[in-house]
Length: 239
Image 1 (cartoon, one colour):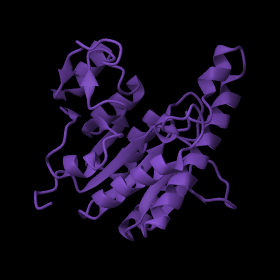
Image 2: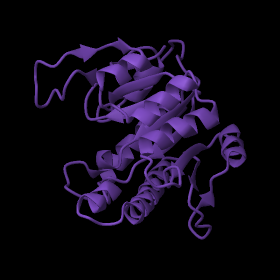
Image 3: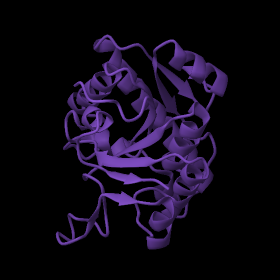
């Protein structure tokens, strides 16, 4: 690719569900390897990449709360799921010769380093892919919010949100085939229209820090790098 790179430092938000593949639960190693190859391809363009990964393929705290359980405990369990996924992604990147590090918002030094902004920036400056686990470290916040927070802390030029579809639609296109697809939106329009691409806190945080949100299909091989190179198909949310 010879096109000028659109963003030189980005944060990629990957949902835990994306790692399941066609399975109903857990991790499909082939899918994780494919996502890792997309990250490696984008990194080869000279882009600095950090990643926030969800845990919905393993556990979701809101599921506990919906059945009368303790939301705080449920969210802590979900945070542990993100650590499992982060370790899986690091393993796949390492297999491909990509230097990667996992930083957790919850201290577990026997498994991975604890997150600090200073350490994260140092690892990124050293050329590593930095994978953030444990969400924000706090209950009641989604990993979307963690993505926006870490993007701001890392000085990311854009927050890439990998989803099941190729952008933002007025409704779920799998349920409503005639749903309108948007090429461009502002942060305010996403909030005003209640478009459920990310939670309100994440969109508001991105808006406050002037961080564009790029929504694309995580399942389209090579799309991450294509969009970085000015091609591909995505919805860009920017003021």
